[in-house]
Image 1 (cartoon, rainbow, N blue to C red):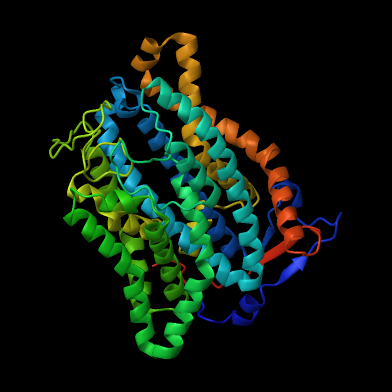
Image 2 (image 1 turned 45 degrees about the vertical axis):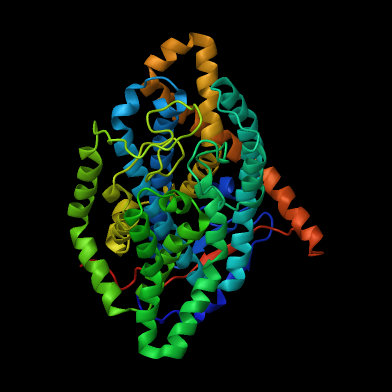
Length: 485
């Protein structure tokens, strides 16, 4: 990173238009991207391009890992109502889900800070509008689907509550994931258990510009002390939520905040703060990045050992709360968990700051030019990463209703007993069907709906009609100086 050497280019954003019929090198590989209504990203140098696509690919893998975890959750006994062979790995799956989701939001904040810093605020507003339109299309359709499929599933399993229907629709229409604060079965819960990261992403995207403005304000008015204030703001919220959740393990503090946009925005902003200080060549953050990069193999190995060591472990259930007749060994427990019917976690399992450190470790793997180049030696093949990332975002929104639908179809076709005995295989088939259907939806349905929504918003605001596709040049100074330890 070269400090502010490219400041004039970054402030301008170089937002250029491309006339119809004019193609540049690589356009044949980006046609799929254009079809989804997104801006075409051009890069000033190969290093910026490789780092950008490497980070997007890490986000994509985090989403796939989350989808696999949710497939295991949907196939476990607390949700199916029958004994499952996956129950022995569910504690490890829940811990992995806690860490991966925290790392996802830190990575997302770092990547959005990278893009915002490169293209400038005016261009960012255009990019953000396209992303928000696509996200809301996913949420609205997934909300209706989840109400239909989830209500049928709840009726069959004798868990139906009418209040869950308006609660689910409200969350998906507004993306306000905030009011699911009690894990008791009689409390209102969303019928789309897995869609909360997409809802939280809406508010995370809305906070990017204000976070940069706040950081600039602190540096401008506090001088050298400003960077320390930014560091405090970056970690204070995450630390407080982690400590309160662990200290009050028999309360709903962890449950109410683990999937709420208020807390996840703090993790997202942690990634933005980390990029901001790294861009300013702060010595503390730079040395931390170098240390984490050099230690990354050992850190990843420790995380794998943490997850692997919990396979087969069971949590001792205490403090049972009286409730309805819902089945499940710990269905009425007030404890540390992310979802209302998941297993109870021990105090050290719910250490949210651990997942944030995992996110910083993953960032360090691609914060050096040579590391990104090893990951993406050919920039042409990396163009499709954006399409794959959009598929994963849609898959997260639709995961739960699709998983339930696949279980319904197989139970009708092969019988419930056979399906319940083969839940490990079902978890693989569920994820496969989900990714296949999300790919078809993203390529053929979502672009048209997103375009209609953007056009409706422009007409409502009396803005100009949609024009030709726009090219955005990402001319970032990121990755120039850090060529490796």
